[in-house]
Length: 119
View 1: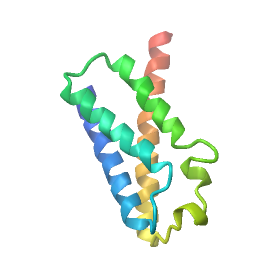
View 2: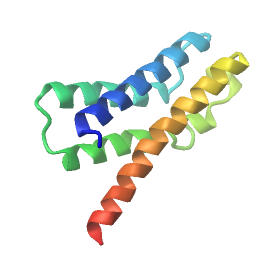
View 3: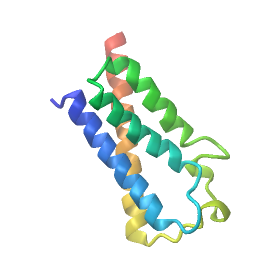
């Protein structure tokens, strides 16, 4: 079984890849949702380097930023050609989707674990 440190390091690395891919593939200014991914990555680094406080207090912060990255009007789902001007090649697009799915999976697993604790 993986430790929280390993899980968070993996999530941080996935978010770093996602932000890097976003930076590389977008012409012009970065989209609004980018800051949420970057904030999550930075918060994970702070949490790990600060000595790992209570993970149950930290996870809602990550979940808040993940939800914010998907909000209407400013989230990635509403990113249109005018704001993002994405010209991703198919391989980059697939990589981006895979990273998004891995991050989403992290939150679904955490929710399942929390639900099991409550039973």
